[in-house]
Length: 192
Image (cartoon, rainbow, N blue to C red; front, side, top):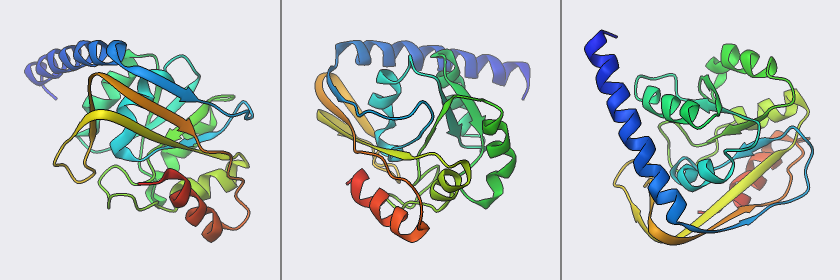
């Protein structure tokens, strides 16, 4: 990436960062949390990450970000908010990224199980395999915002309108014993 591309990316990142802060500070959020261990895997649909990124910003969380070029903008915005980021995907090719996550002791992990490119609301097996391998539970997160705008992207990305009411809810713990059952349970708890 050349100097001009880096500068354009910096301008875009800064602009989006401050626009998001304005929206986030205006939201009326109800956040329902559960009792959970120090280290978990948070799972949220790709479309619903925007409100959740705001409320979880003060916790120790590493977020798995797309290794593709389009993930660089998200990577920079998340890092500017204090998140640890790991570039990788939730498929079998993410082993190097997962090994980097393991080095981040006592840090929870956040994954969009249908990301980075879909299909929408289809849980990929990587999140369940990771939970089983690390022996930590999955915490599904559901998000509801009204009013909001949905982009025409593959995931119908949720953009809360300023001053919207948002409900962010941790939908229990999923301890992975049987991967097929855990995939079904995760899909059900994430909702639509």
